[in-house]
Length: 217
Length: 254
Image (cartoon, each protein chain N blue to C red):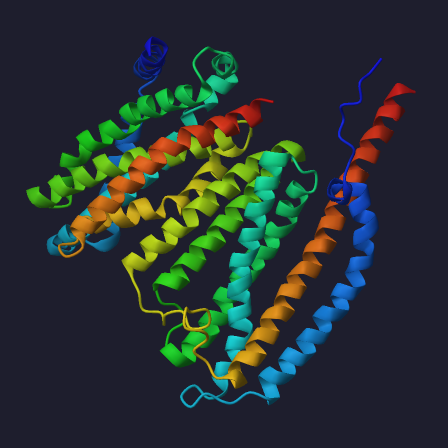
């Protein structure tokens, strides 16, 4: 457990001290939401109606953009090989990295959502529900992302393939995440999203660790 | 001194040896081709000349005889790929990754054809090429998964490693497809409910069901034929690559 916590701490330290990548991702997240009104017009009621969907799309794209960082740096400087031979099982290593990645990439996005709520003229209730949906759904997105990153870690041109692989798989997260705001079916969607997020978060470290082992052979 | 602990290969693992596979599958190609042609001839004759028009759709109903088999194959091929992925990961079966690689483009083409014929059928009957309803959407997502798997296959240089990595992705996709299907159904349902395979038996008259089943058999045979030919090609291609690498090594040694 100490090693597990140390690994999370290491990843957090690396993220904070080397380059402001988390901030860049937040910037991208806000920018996606900023360009949407230019595309669909500044009509406030329409923006209000579309706002949760826009926030979800922005979060989706930001998560896909960031997932390449999950294992690539560790693979390039050789620390992934060390981690593979550590006492901590590789599955736990992956789980620790997933938690750290969520803290670095998903949490800042959640903190940035009030800006988007303002820009897209969301109501407070709408904003609260969107944040709740993102809070439940982003662990699933990060876990799918971990799988995509693990599968493409050995590839020089893997940066583009991981999002293409992961996007169709994470469609249910999107559906239930946006569905949570539906006044009629919202409670059902909430439960489905929670179930999906739990299952994916529980299983993806095993699949990703398997892929990392194969890639390292 | 060595104790003989190596298991003697049984008929099944001999079947699996790539060289043996090349030898015995040679006698499979022509019979399969003839059976495919025959069943297509019978099926198309039924479909065009010996099946009734629909009282609403008229001749348009005949699109069904190509649409439904393609949709059936789009799922069957993924099943084949999932089984071969298990073969790769669990038994390290030497032919399993070849089968997975051979099946992926076939599955993508059958899925694309199912979507294409579906939209051709949808235009005159529903009045639109595309509708975001449950089954069409999940077929589209299936096509995206196929294309992702093909892209992953092409990204690797080392085909043996690619086989095992793709197998993981294929299995994750196989577990995820029911979830996607359920979520998309939850999201929107307009399509007519299933009508061939239902608990109470087919809800179609025999005059339509017979040509449909013959066409499904014909398309399945076509898939089997193309799969065998593609697997043979892939094995030969790998062998040619190995030979050229050996030749290059010998050239370098001189």
